[in-house]
Image 1 (cartoon, rainbow, N blue to C red):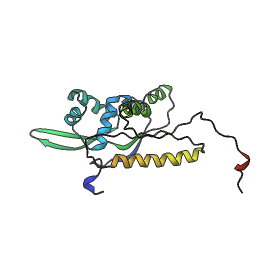
Image 2: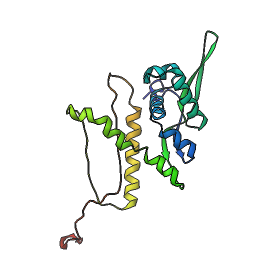
Image 3: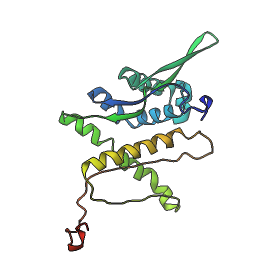
Image 4: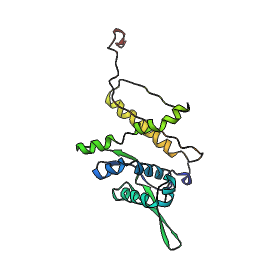
Amino acid sequence: MSVNEQIPDYELDEMVVVTAPEQLRALADPLRGTLLELLLERAATITEMARAVDRPKSTVDYHVNLLVEVGLARVVRTRRVRAIEERYFGRVARTIYVGALHRAEDKQVVASLNGLAQAAAEAAPANAADDLRCTLVHARIPIEEVRSFWAEVQEVARRFAQIPRSGDQVYGFVAGLYPTDAPTLPEGAGDSPG
C-alpha cells in the first residue's frame, strides 16, 4: 500500500488504552462512536461529519469537541477557506482498548459498549436478506491461547479497517471472544498421548 493509500489519511497511534471515566462515558454515546468510526476512514471536518450522520453541525461540533477534550480525537490538519480556518479531525489511535476497570460505575458504562449487541442489531436486515456471513465456534483452550488468538483477531480487524475505501456499501466486521457454559467432554481413555 502506498503512502497515498494510507487509511486513514493521517498519522495515528496503533492503540490507546482507555480507563478514565470521562473517556468511557464519551465512548458510551452511539453518535460519538459513529463519529470515531468515520474518522477511521479519513480526517474530516465538522461539516463533512454532520452531513454523513445527517445531524446538525452544532450537535456534531459538541460531540467532536468532547472527544477532543477527553483525548480520543484531535485536530490533524487545518486549511484556510476564505477567511476561516477549517479544522480536520482524526482519532488519536486506530484501536481504542478499554483497559482494566476498578469502579463499578465504569464497568456498567463498558457493559453498554457491547459491540456484539450493536452488530446483531445492524446484521438483522442482512440476515433477513440472506446476506450475512457469520460463524460461531466453541473451543476449550487455556487462557494463554485466548490471548494469543485475540491478538491475531485484532490484527485481522486492523487489516479490515485498512482496506482502501470504494464501493457503495459499508460492511461491518465483528469478533467476540468470551467464556461460556458450553459443555465439554470428559477426558477419554483414548486421549493419552502415544
